[in-house]
Image (cartoon, rainbow, N blue to C red; front, side, top):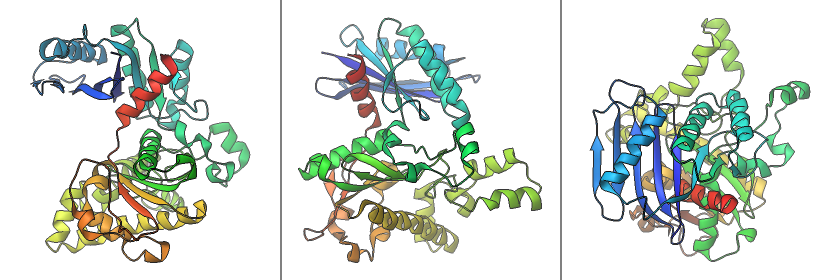
Amino acid sequence: MTAALVVNSGSSSFKYQLIELDDERTLASGLVERIGESAGAWKHTNAITGESSSNDAASVPDHAAGFQAMLDAFGKVGPSFDEHPPAVVGHRVVHGGTTFDAATVVTADVEQQIEDLSSLAPLHNPANLEGIRAAKQVFSDVPHVAVFDTAFHQTMPPHAYTYAIPSDLAERYGIRRYGMHGTSHKYVSEQAAAFLGRPLSELKTIVLHLGNGASAAAIDGGKSIETSMGLTPLEGLVMGTRSGDLDPAVLVHLHREAGLDFDEIDDILNKRSGLLGLTGNGDMRDVQDAASKGDEVAEAALAVYRHRIRRYVGAYTAQLGGLDAIVFTAGVGENNALLRRRVLAGLEHLGIEVDPDRNELASREARRISTDGSRVAVLVIPTNEELEIARQSAAVAL
């Protein structure tokens, strides 16, 4: 039996899963958070036995201490690393720029390149790298693999990733569309082909990854040809706290007229916009609940949210030259039947027909929510980025 440990490291927390590669079962999962604060916290679940344990008081001064807490949790709750030793450790890294178009075994040179790319993802890459370095101290005798959110989108053609700014500036500062959520888009598009029983190479698919962060991708024959996120995760769809698309002149206007500096503008667009900026609440569940009770502000915000998605569905259908499937995934996409119905309402002219009963059915399994006669298959497929990271890590390192 061969296992992979998958790590998703943030600046003050990290999530992990231990996955059995032979049958792709999750053996254990957990979260270590509040790293660097006076009191840390961790939670660990043994997926084999169902037993869980947590600690909300112990100090976790840094990521290295966090990995020690994880080891202690495996020792206390299991499963045993003696029985399921990780043969590889896979790490989520947000930005690989144009340097990385596939999962890559981590070397000292790769670590330096991830650090050099931090200007493109200053909130993510440094934290990802900190997790890699801490994990390598604990698991020093197995390969570590970086799996990049941007890698899947490196198949986009130049006309899709190029911004119309002076080319010397774009080249000097790496300004182009990179896209994010690539691990999820890759996994979900492949699962869609398997669900439909059709070769991936034949399918034209739009994947809507709708969570607190959200992105759309046009996938032709298994390759990304367009995606909504750009240089950073800010562009594209309306998100929980991010604005998504807006006229770039808004930034200049806020600087000139409101006297805001660019750090303040960056904070507004990334952390105080989206649903939060429109309603005061960044959680889709709360916004939808308010709208159901007659809150006109919440309903107006949801209309903006849906309109942006529909705009991308139309644009990507045109870019693909046809459409075989639309797939909803991630927390909002998988669980919000009302949103799915309203996003796709009135798109019968594109061959999209949603079955109301199928759409309302709650399930954790992949499922079809379109009618039998719908020319375009509409699917809900739970994403599993951790499994995709485990697969890619094993493929390049074992």
